[in-house]
Image (cartoon, rainbow, N blue to C red; front, side, top):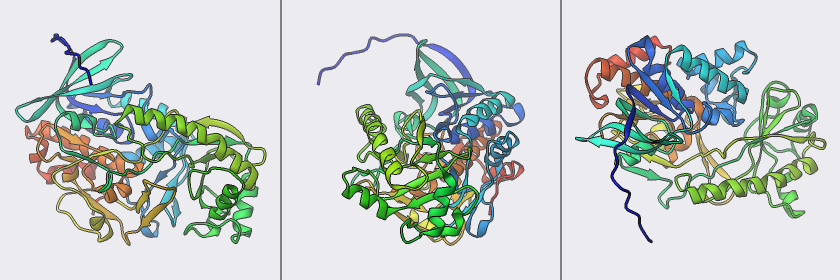
Length: 454
């Protein structure tokens, strides 16, 4: 390997803010809004893409707003976003689901507009098309970041930084200990979402309800598909039949999601095992392979699944959605045992209900493990073990491989982001590092923001 020594140069400080949020996905937009609450902090949100919303914009439903028994467990700013979308006819109700606890269908394009509106209303400065390439660490604390854009290489200084990149990019560059995957390094594979229009959704519903022997479902009762929003997870027999006839289907289950339009279905069936989103070669290969898989999946649906005979490709997500990459080692590392045993914590920042849903790193199947009740997530999963001045929210917070498989869904990520933003703001107001913040102050603030806590 050859090397090039970069000459020393003086970098311009683009901005000096109180709170810098890196990553404008589900966790990031909530973190920025919470940090800006009351107008006491100058907040900036940096995003590498040309819009806000992240995985909220790729055609996925939001899972896990409700817990066992249909009781709502995620509130706060996440619910505020749903309320805003509903006022424009761009979100459905929280529908109970035996497999996913609940599903909420949203319009992926409307998300972008509402996210921009939320940031403007609360005074957050948004900077798009900008990557964070390094962290500035002094005396064991993060003081700022180095960013890259078409304007060149610049610096943003901040009293507090919240890493909502999904890949723990800031934390990793700051020297925070990070891990990826299971004991062998295997990570859950990503999926390129896409939608089809011209689907006879009534025919699909009728087949599921009337012929369970042919159109088999995983866990979910067929009555769930008679009306309203739905997710199909099953049709294993059809996939085996398609494979026998020469179609190379990359997954073991058919996963279909109803859209906001009557003839619209979103498809979650591409899969590229072995992908590492922190490696550009690997992520590039993933995008290429995903697009090759897409027409095969469409052919399968048209030939084997009722209602898809005249379906046409309508929309392909702008990027492949990543289920798993880096996670930090924080003051507490959440485990699957904590989730399944409903462990109580002294510093809960939210409740969650989504099961431990591990898409296997090899093959095309998954494993699901359920908690009997909604479970708690502690504040300490947001706080790196050693580096100060930094909070980490979303699916890169401090979880092990199995726990992250439960907490990675967007409802939980939004709740974690809101807690991180509130903690950053309060730590500045009370002149303490986030690791030293009095939990009672954070709890009071979250309750004022309609967060549901135990």
